[in-house]
Length: 212
Picture 1: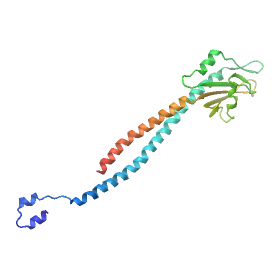
Picture 2: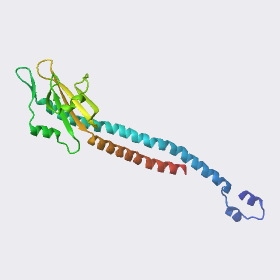
Picture 3: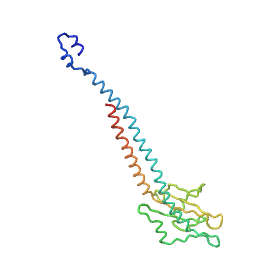
């Protein structure tokens, strides 16, 4: 338009400078379409990144939380192990008072049960119903497994130690229902989703701004 005005002898210099110079309106839909495609290309990887970040956070945080609960269960196993004694005839015994037994079972969330088996598989103390839950021997004296006790899912911690006449072995088994573990799993899941959301919001905002 400015060039046409310059070529027109009837148009003055002031009029020429005042002529509008802009993109033709027919180019606007094409630009908007390009911006929309650009947003889609940038947002698609973010939609994949957010759940992957949440999954990674969940995996990295959940394992230590569950390991901590296993270590807490091991404390009860060790307490029972320290109570095992051997008499002059090489017989294993476990002197367990009612107060100590009650303290070992005390938990505000889960039900804790235990059994201590002598070298011949005899019950030295605890609940005989736990005998079928004794894990198979392994390389480590410590074993942790998931099992069911009377239809209820439980976590099992088992430890084998020398007792009685050599080569006698006593096995201590402690079980715990999964209340604290379910609470830990939910807490870690919420934290993972929150962390992924905190990462996603600014990235999405930057993507939208960059595509404008």
